[in-house]
Amino acid sequence: MSNPDGKQNILVVDDEPQITRVLKTTLSSQGYGIRTASDGEEALHAMSEWPPDLIVTDLRMPNMDGLELCREVRKTSRVPIIVLSVKGEDSIKVQALDAGADDYVTKPFSMTELTARIRAALRRASVPDQPRVPLIELGDFRIDVPGRTVRVKTRDVHLTPKEFDLLVYLARHAGRVLTHRTLLAAVWGPNSVEQPEYLRVFVGQLRKKLEGDAFSKYIVTEPWVGYRFEPGD
Image 1 (cartoon, one colour):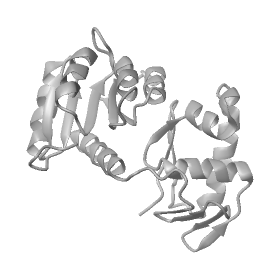
Image 2 (spheres, rainbow, N blue to C red; image 1 turned 90 degrees about the vertical axis):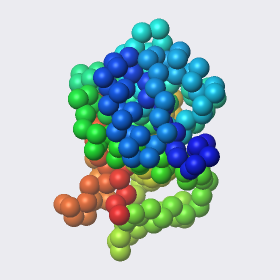
Image 3 (tube, helix red, strand yellow; image 1 turned 90 degrees about the horizontal axis):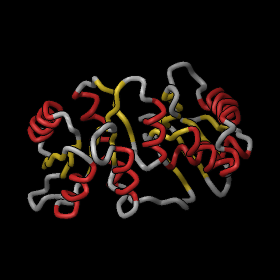
C-alpha cells in the first residue's frame, strides 16, 4: 500500500518525541510518507485509517509496548516491522522477532543504518513469497531444491540433509534476522527449540562448506539473537 503519489508509508511508533521528530524529518526528506504514534494502541488506530508499508517501533512504551504491537499486527498483516531497542535488551529483541518483527536496530543508532534497513525491508516486502519455488537463485547461490544440490559461485557444495534444509530456510528469508528458536523449530521441529547446541553445530559446519574463501561471510551472527543470511551480490 502506497500513497496515490507513489510514496511509501512508514509508521513510526515511539514515546520519545525527540526520536519521532528526527525520524519524521529525516524519512520525509527521503520521500516517504510518515505518521507517528506514541504507543501500540495509537499505532493500531493509525493503521486502521492509514495502512503503512513499514512500521518502525520502539519496544518499551506505555499502554501497549512494541512486543504486543508486533503480536497484534501479525494477526492481520504482514507489513515489515523494524524494532528499536536499547543495548542489553537481547531477550526482548528475541521475543519481538519471534512475535513477527523482521529486523531490529539498537539505540543509539545511525540514520544511515536505519534507512538502509528500511530500504532492505521494503525491497523484500515487494517480492512475493514463493515458499515452494524449485530453484533459488540468489546472489552467489544456485540452490536446486528438488535435486538438493547447491552451487556457490562456480563451486558445487555437498551438504548433509539437515545442512541443506537449514540453508534453504535461510535463503528463503535472506536478509532477515532469524532467531535461534525460529530456525530450530523450522528445521528440527518444535520440540527442539530449547536445544540451541544443534543450531551452533550445524551453522558452524555450513559456514565451513559455504565460505570457501575468507572474504565471503554468508551467515552473519546476530549476538544472543540468531542469524542473518547474506547471499552476496
